Image (cartoon, one colour):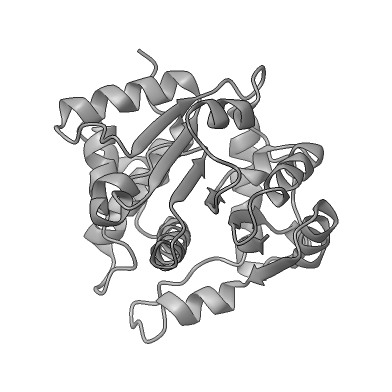
Amino acid sequence: MIGPESTAERVALWRALHIELDQSPHVLEDEVGLRLADPPPGWRDRADMDPQTTALSRACVTARARFVEDLVVEQAGQGVDQYVILGAGLDTFAQRRPEIGARLTVFEVDQAGPQAWKRQRLLELGYGIPEWLRLVPVDFETESWWERLISAGFDPQRRAVVVSTGVSMYLTREANIQTLRHLAALAPGSTFVTTFQLPLELLDDEERPIRRAVENAARASGVPFLSLFDPDELIGLAEDAGFPSAQHISTSAMTQLYFAGRTDGLRPPSAEQILVAKT
């Protein structure tokens, strides 16, 4: 059976390393992803797990997950009862926050092979698949994820939070625009959250060599970066797609939210930013 995609596994392991390596308070407490991934002994010695060179990555993946989780909790408190995770990978919200998940219908949309593997791991580890968790397999190249989502019980006439993190840079510009157009038609009061990567020239100087290395590695593994966005450009695309409101959440805003007062120097990178669009 196909295992998790390498990027999904890497994110899960970085979250686990955040707890092991970084000072408390931790931005996100997630060890479930490590249990799901079940990497072989010695995984901490991998080059992509180096404590020094992955500090920015650890801050990035934990901060964006915490931001999304806080928003979902807030929206659930306001009566929103649908939560969609596009490209879910080894997301563990349903396992870590079942008291919130049980108030929602959570749709995890992902490639069929990795998702079947995740389903088996959830059962093996005793987490199970609660009635409110829908695993939605889709072949993004040949199928409509929107149609698959509807067939899994998603109601576009009811408010929802839809999230896509760590995905937009792997999609073409047109695919990103099509996603915005789809989601701008959600019921009024819905929220779409997506991360996006800045063009190289907008990065902090110290991060540019890291970005070049990341892009080279992605290209070598067959998943090159296809779309980079200036924040104002992406806000304009969201508004053109039909969203009446779109807001850029900057690195400085994320730092104030989750890293203020830390003495270990951990902070999120400038490379990845967040867009929050509301219908």
